Length: 149
Image 1 (tube, rainbow, N blue to C red):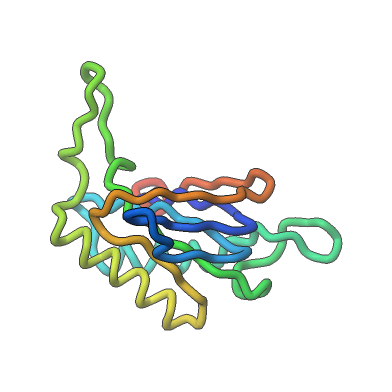
Image 2 (tube, rainbow, N blue to C red):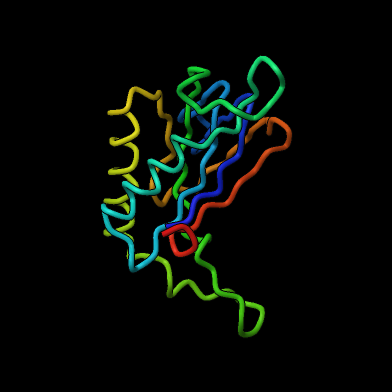
């Protein structure tokens, strides 16, 4: 599982020229699912995401997690995080999880984060989405389950 986590002041997801969802201060997360992912890996990635301390405390140090600032999370499905560009110029996506499995894990991640008391906004799995955001910092972190666990 791969997460691209951007600390944002706000983010909006537009589908078919209509606002699907939006958040204020928090994370805009692009989530990619591989063929090897499962709920156990998802749980570890969720824990890592929620425990990241990348918000500033009263001393200006990045020392606070999302719950400490009452932040919100937008999660967008992004199979292209598993693009393989080793051969040629056209990416291969064979490492990306099948749509059924990836959709199930995407929904699982959303529900688990909601169950932790965090406000979650989402896109729509497989939809053509337009995402706008104000990156705060900018501050962007990439989390990859293959490198973390």
